Length: 321
Image (cartoon, rainbow, N blue to C red; front, top):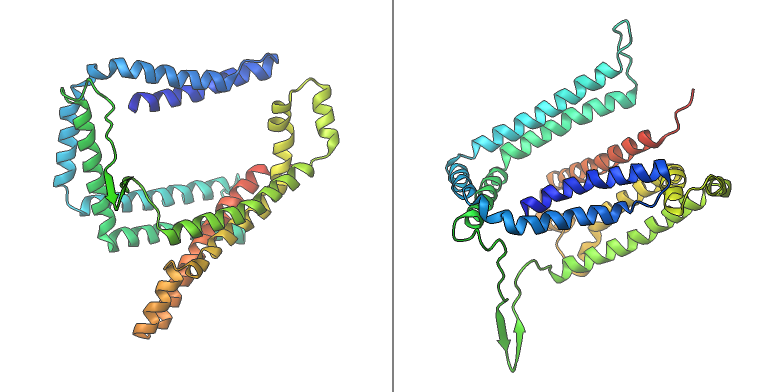
């Protein structure tokens, strides 16, 4: 798996190189096929060189033992420091970019909102990490299990067989044997909500994409064909850069609707945040804290989606004099 991941990174650069040659010369260099071939080559090589890395087994075992001995306070301090440091670095860089030659900083209301959102997000992360110790415990346990599996894969016994396979359990209820429920499964309620909101929202997003592509003037495509560009190059270099300016705003609204439509899960018998909150304040009478949690959750998710969409809008906007 490690060799395949390295191959995926190498395939990315190979694809970019072949794509650049294709754009410069106009020759068909098949960048996708070259990328897939690079990944396959690394995977094939990994099957044969895997036994040579048996010495990594004790190292991964030592890391697993170290993670098992660490207290929960260590990942809490680490994640808190990363969150505060990232927010501080981003705010300093943001203010520095808006500083004039004379050292004066001019910030709009939107700029102040971004700074406040970044600082508030870091404080929320620190509060969540410190308040809920289960997150740090999950990180330590997951890291220990991961390095434990890697130790078993890279030891002397397992070095010659990098892939293990097992048959699923056979469960027989009545006269007909069935495969057991091994692996990742979804409950009926979650599956119903998942596919419902995905299909419903994807239909609207598909219409947004279709409308954005049709909004590009036909003359742009004709001019691109006149200079010898192929259909893939026309779509990538001419149509999509102009269409994304039309696609992004309504698509962001659809993602906001997708977030809010998940509260309809109670219709199929699934207990989501709203349903659990309703049960809590019906049993305890604490309506205000429950509603406050609803507000903070949906507000934070909506603001996060808005920040991401606005960032892409700024990247795609026309630069004028």
